[in-house]
Length: 185
Image (cartoon, rainbow, N blue to C red; front, side, top):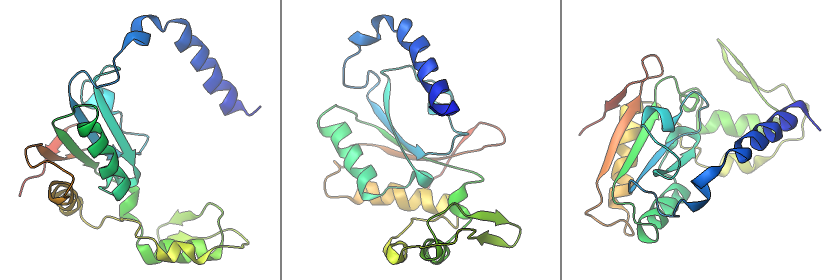
């Protein structure tokens, strides 16, 4: 086993030993809302939004973007599990701001190994082979956080499967202060 796997399984043993009444939590989120946010490890939605287990749905992806799959999850969250308010939360210093679709396509076409980044940009260190498939994906990169939040909120609100009466709020989490800053307009 790997060291990380051992650590994860040990942590799970400790968690399960004190599981208590969590087995009785209902499937629908108790506070009736959902958050779409970034997968960045520095963001802890439970802490910045005051959540306990069972409170809300948290949907995470690279950039916290309103991809087709994220909208699918929000629609299921509402239609089958009763959430009636949604938050789109991006953040400062996001990795999705550090590359473009073209850069990602170039890196993947060279190799599938992990790339490196320095002051001059991203560099592929792998020997290959790569794949051209990365050139045909919209990676939903971000050039302006406020603009991307507005675009994602508008995309969600405008989706034909999203009820018009579900409020969708947009915020940027500030990685330096921990504060949520509302994005309007």
